[in-house]
Length: 334
Image 1 (cartoon, rainbow, N blue to C red):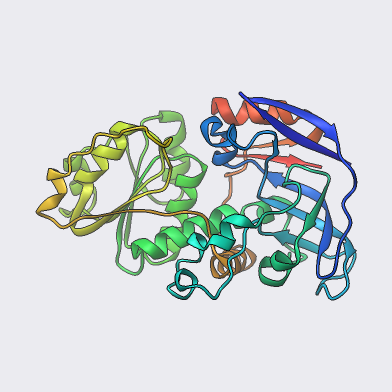
Image 2 (cartoon, one colour):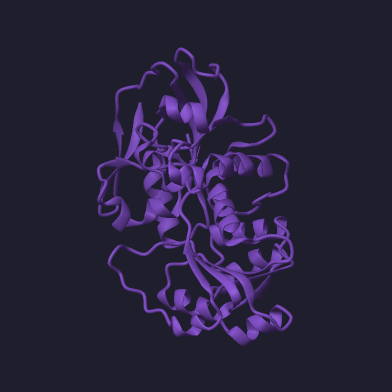
């Protein structure tokens, strides 16, 4: 089989690998499609793992099923790359993405491979049949939507929420759509790039060009936000977001910065309002199941999120489109 190997410093090659085989409880899938995630593009994050096969948003067909695996050859499935133990204190507290086992598990060799071996623990906990009426593109969005769902649950987004999303990339647009589905009464999207604003407006959000607290207050009927979700690495935006949350509000940082990179934050701006700062990482099994259900029932549509489909043979071009921002979201087709 062939797999796309990331060697560091932005370099990718398509190399030959031995075909995997399924052990007891395991499955092997033939990849149909896999999305490119923002973390796949973070050189500082991936260079420490290189050489590595990237990709963690795959959908594929089962071609081998090991003894005891609850899937049949021919099943089309979504595969989650990490799974928790469901037994440790963090899992029991609902923080399963922080579980040690969660970070230790992974698919073999990665989503950007023609064949993927899925370990038994992943098969048992977080592999799911894809409904017949869900296309491969939508199935690649299960994992990113689940990450957003987990974050919004953590932030307390729900009926009556006033939500501000900073950044209208693919994740920011999905954040805006999901917030409305969860019952937010008002959604404001802040995006300085004029080319990206129409997509946010099409979702029914109020769209602003900058993190101007007065403009946000006006858009929210004289109040500031209950939740501000920052979907950008911009230091200025990370700080400006602090001024957009109302009393007891939440500012959630969805996009990471490199370790050791200092971001100046005006914490005095939030002290008297008891604003909570939080981060969110990945998605657990319950988030995956619920994201799949939302997409399957059409409650979340994510229309227009995937702007480019690229053949696996042109994986370099796929990453170029994603890195330059020419594409909003890229799916690699096998």
